[in-house]
Image (cartoon, rainbow, N blue to C red):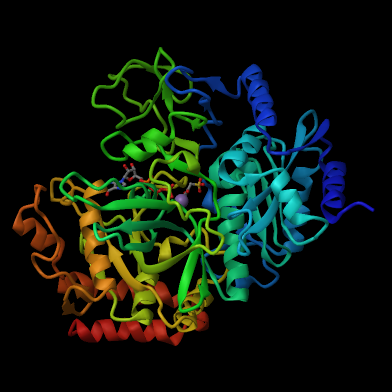
Length: 579
Ligand code: GTP
Ligand code: SPV
Ligand code: MN
């Protein structure tokens, strides 16, 4: 008797007509063989093997360099269940339309069957998925990003309970590109893209869109969050989960290195992009479902993020970066003096070129276990206890460096009202402020009104829910210079967060929440003048009144799916602002 997995693979092969079917076992030998084949096919290029052993460059199609939100759909049976935050197609219509594109789409290609576990192999909270793909780049990337191969098949056994992901490169045309989610069937169909969150289906499609739907049904949270443990000189470690929109600093905060002035602190990385959090005892506990980092290259260097620079020195893939004549990867911001290079599209590039050497959304794919700051708890089956949740956007104005919510419902409101400037992580205009509740706008697999309700309810499921904060590292001067040094210095803000969690520091009560008192954020050893600090921590009453109006308008689209508590929070804010 074939297992449910074998049946599905057979059925899919009959529809997509691959030349061969390869079941991935996840072994080193298999990885090396796939790499050799891609080198021969010139879909991978060797980087300098002395400086970057086991590292390779991949160039994706120039039309296929970021997530495509307008081609991403939630195909729930009821349109209202997808909500105004998702594109929707009826399941039958979607299968008809996109099924045609899959017909024969793998002709002449190998079909890889990629079983994977999201989460530590022996955690009760982990999930099995299987991605069928005709891209060897996806197969090797999945080996870095997940626990892939035999371990997953062993965990699955002959069960039919797994997330089914079907992926084909198709013809890579954006006209025939679709990323479809069928949450009621725990199924994903993706065609026409070989890049990032569109193609590595364990990541955004499974671990966020499908998982968020499951989490609502089962009473947990699947979130776009890093997880970090901050160890103080006393030896106390406090775990924080933080949601920032794409390319707004999660990987950097997850791997923060305390500056020399912050003696005795250690920061431990548990995850850099996704957190699955469950009530357990009195607390929420979080696991990182991933096994690797798919991180933004530009801006990364040995000053801003030395930990990730060490992580990516071996066994890593680089996608759409530039490369120097001696085979070193290159991107904007790597070093002060740019070299001559070949750009991300394989064209000669010089520092005088108008264009960029690396695509702004160029990325590295690297194993988490290579990270010098990886937490000893990162694969703990029970996860780590979360004491604080932090929401942070990229905002040039208005939003203070840090503030705290009054309580859980107000904290949910702070997450729900987050807005951030768009970045190159998705194909659309960059630098536009858009509302991105909980950094989940592109990733919440169901109606966001219901999602707010689910969040509100989660606070009551544990005796000791995390304290909730907002942060903003991205305030700028009128000349466009960052007011806050950011990166490692963000530890100074986390110290205030931790002190608040443990009830060790007072705060000013303001209409928007609790703000630090002057002097409560340590600025010794950094060049932040007292008046700049005052500006970073100011509550701009007129600005917040206008913002509250914008919030109200944003919430209207959810109609009667919006919890009345959220509307009430908005009204209370307006009242506190005296408007
Ligand atoms: P995704 O992988 O898309 O989810 O991104 P992310 O949230 O992990 O963002 P990441 O840490 O990769 O940072 C994105 C960009 O923001 C990089 O260019 C960083 O150099 C920059 N950045 C990160 N932290 C800070 C900060 O504290 N201050 C400033 N000014 N820039 C930062
Ligand atoms: C993001 O956009 O939040 C990412 C990159 O982490 S991708 O996997 O392409 O979605
Ligand atoms: Mn992300």
